[in-house]
Amino acid sequence: GVDFDQGCRPAPVSGLCNAYFECWYFDVSAGSCEQFVYGGCGGNANNYKSQRECEVACLRTS
Image 1 (cartoon, rainbow, N blue to C red):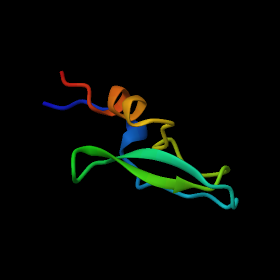
Image 2: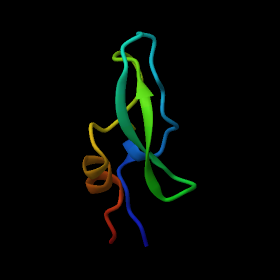
Image 3: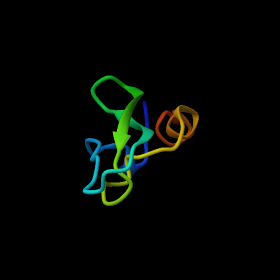
Image 4: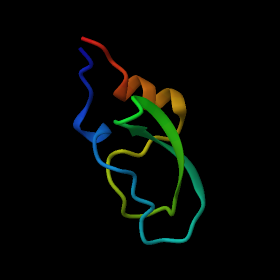
């Protein structure tokens, strides 16, 4: 089965700031990494700088 990091589970959070960073999060229901806009502060652990970084963290198989 798929075994992923706890940071991969929460829904993405843009945060309270108004910057514009195109980041990636793991969509548990889709089973894939998707892009979202991050405001630069706050948020949660489900926030990766690239699709590759997200996939490495969240698409490990056991």
